[in-house]
Image 1 (cartoon, rainbow, N blue to C red):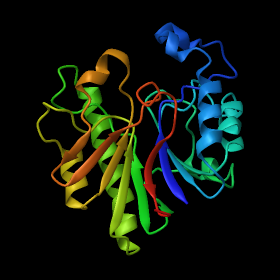
Image 2 (cartoon, rainbow, N blue to C red):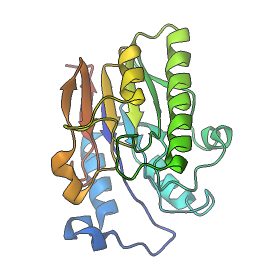
Image 3 (cartoon, rainbow, N blue to C red):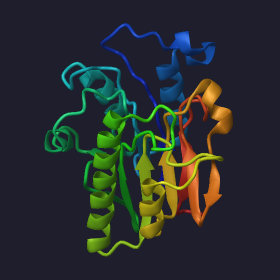
Image 4 (cartoon, helix red, strand yellow):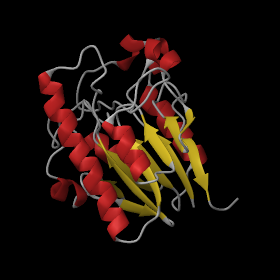
Length: 232
């Protein structure tokens, strides 16, 4: 009953969105994901998917992408990415599949861990941060706190957080997302969003007793990354 993570699947079965324009390693990336997934994961495992799931604009258009994920072994827990425009009512999403669970203000469980999260957003220290970004960032802070509070209220002390956006890098100052993560004594943070030329500056490792793990597809060679294995 292992826990894995992957993000930035960028599926596009219903649209013409060739991912190899971002590099030769993205050619037929959906086939790579499926092949690696089938080798690693069984029905008793859980996979965290940290956003940028489908290029579709509407959930009806993206159903083939979601069906593809659903057809793969294991339970899946998902958060929204910045390209997931198809993301609709959380109640509607959580009614679609038996083994796919979508986080927005809520949480789900893996063994004795609560899996919490939100999309996150670019942080205020970014040079591109605007007043519009501030509104989204503040809303994501509220969603992250609601997710964590719901888990704490139900008695969970072991917590893993999924974010799409990176909450920290090797040079950025503290921000409210990190403050919330540390306030709730989160053990691990799974995140994505960073690709290509951005990978060298992405932060991975421990900071103030929190482990940060980057799971962008091209960073982990399209192979779900093992996070926890309770059989070992």
